[in-house]
Amino acid sequence: MIDYRSQDFAAELSDFDLVLDSLGGENLSKSLTILRAGGKAIGITGPPTPEFAAENGLNPVMGLVTRAFSSKIRRQAKSLGVKYEFLFMAPSGSQLRRIAELVDSGAIKPVVGKTFGFAQVPEALGALVEGGLRGKVVITVP
Image (spheres, rainbow, N blue to C red):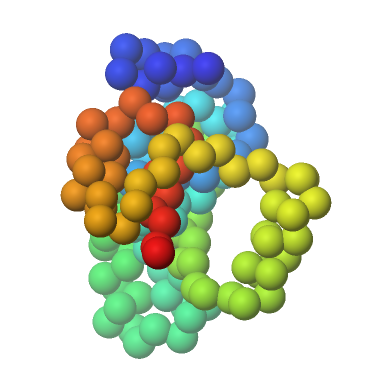
């Protein structure tokens, strides 16, 4: 277990096959360093890659834009002998049903850090900003 407030995960971890990065920026850059040769980092906050642009039929100008935005992280990944991909998450009813089945069967066990009522949304956001909760913050709607 890594305490992100007092430990640098990049200094503590190594030889991973896969990293799913949801923060981007410096976190993504550091994530590349914990991969074994041939490993892969998948970013969901970007930057998008030229491959993403091509796969999604974006116009050539957007292809150039994605190439420019992702050039630094792609160069770093190449120099480390790892791969970087961008994943654009789209809503999918069938995927959500499958996830619900996994949760219902107990194969996936979500961790709830704290539950707030809808009237407590400001407090819930404050808890997210403060950090330190293990698990998800849940808002209940009456």
